[in-house]
Length: 412
Image (cartoon, rainbow, N blue to C red):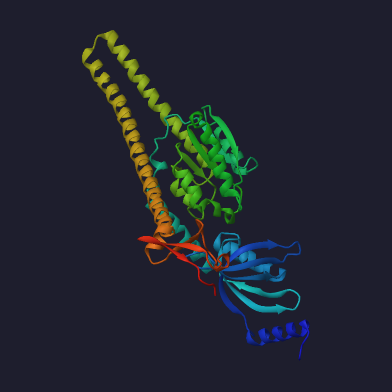
């Protein structure tokens, strides 16, 4: 019998691949894992999934050697505004390689950032359309911002420059107001940022009555770290949060999904503080006007000028009536939204129950018997193999419309 060594087989495969794939190929894939080596090399795992079921159709190791990675990394990040990371779809130029020890791999030589930009935009648009279909795109915007928003729940990294800028602006000489601030620390960039921010929202919700607004701020980082703010789950939690959310995540390049879903979006943490100060200044001005009107009422009362007194009373009555109507409108809006959400959840659960009911039905013995299958028992126990029978055994066979008993004559 002819035989060859393993190394000779590996060499033949290597030569075959080298001759078959002499030049680089452009391929589409998803990055499932990415790891940067201390020596500057970048190791990846690439996959392709079925678009309908997410079943993995193909998987391969890949590498970007340090000399190439030093050029590709800044080029990709500058072009896309994102870091090359797991979960990202890419169009890459590769050399197909095979090594007798390390096996099959792809040597990445180039990357097309325009393809990834298109994929990111398509994913973002899909999330926005899903939020609109769920009816929650404007839910947080419709919450009435308190007249005096002074109790602030802040989600930020405690060491972020943006957090310091926000606090400095609140306490600046231009601000004559007192704010109560409570920091809920969170990771504001990277793979764990989304879950960390959601956990911070959950902690705020536990004492939601203690706060007027939620401030989500981030500053001092690169625009490549903003992917977490384009998350459906984060948007879902923010949209349905019972307090107004003010987003100031410190970027100028693009508008994130968080910016679209939040009650108010500003460009920087400093701008978020200025927004709150302006809100209190406007409220202070309104209160001064009301106080002045009350003072005029008192003065007119002393002067017994009933005509002007009645006019100012009407003005005060109008102002208070308008505020009551605004509150009633907001309560009705919240009631309608809650009703829509509950109806949607109930419909989904009803559909799921119908599906489970149908699934149970088609797997039941009654269903199987009805469509031509039978069930055979011996001494009341279901038979699944002829090995359990011997000549002379009395068996019972069940059909959909009755049962018969038989005696075993012989076994083949």
